[in-house]
Length: 220
Ligand code: C5P
Image (cartoon, rainbow, N blue to C red; front, top):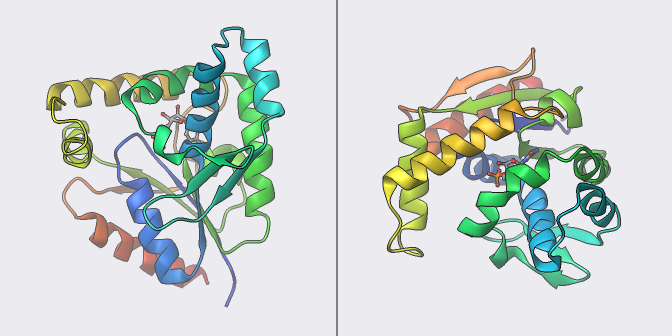
């Protein structure tokens, strides 16, 4: 059977990472969470207190970043140190779109993503996978859902860790990030021309994975 390269793009909270993990497990594929890579760059920018875009791009180009599969989520290591637990915080979420809009940061991450993806048997989730990173992917999905539904999912995911979190704030954060991601100059979030649009507002993430599994099987 052919080892596919699958691209899953879409806005925040559409369930891309949960669905990608289920699909990767079912197919025996590797899963690459490209959002975690931009979050890792953002974390390093904050840790080092960088403000200049040129310096940020230079730092991203020289970053010793490794990724490794994990039970819950993909792990990101910088200089051998696992920083995964620091990546999905409200502070990083608030800054990541600004850092991911810097051209030099994107070039560095896309180079690494293509290197990891070149063997096939891989699922990448992100914002520009079908349009920029893997324009020749075997299957391209643009996964979305209503902003209300996406906010509810994020709220459920975070409420045990952040008891003070509010649904309206989560919705606002998602809308702001989506606006920034789809209006930036370099590689904005948009569906590839040959992507299959999937709205999963009214189906579960397991059902979404089943649907995508059927599409992947037809391509193998
Ligand atoms: O997927 P996740 O929500 O963790 O992504 C965090 C951020 O990283 C996005 O809001 C976006 O700014 C950036 N990103 C990107 N391109 C990708 C993946 C993520 O610009 N391929």
